[in-house]
Length: 119
Image 1 (cartoon, rainbow, N blue to C red):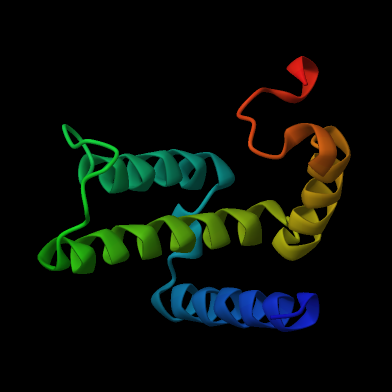
Image 2: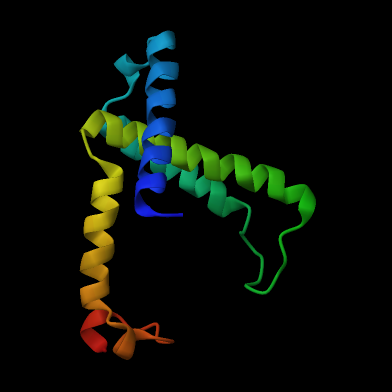
């Protein structure tokens, strides 16, 4: 998938979400502060599915549905946050991936879990 397809898909998802919230008059509850907290809560709910499991444990099919729902909640919260905070998420992603590529050049970082300042 190229950059422009990904961007337009993300913008479309965010536009659907903005309209969904507008129809329900939920913007009044969606301050960046509250959405940042909500994002943390939803991420914790996703993590809960992996509590007390091992890294090599497979995700059971019956759990996948619930994990997918939690992952979607994380995305919804993130898109809501970005909409309210006026953050262009695809542009922020592009900027950050370029910055990370400079911090973690392939020839130094490939196969390593070291932080950029330890490479």
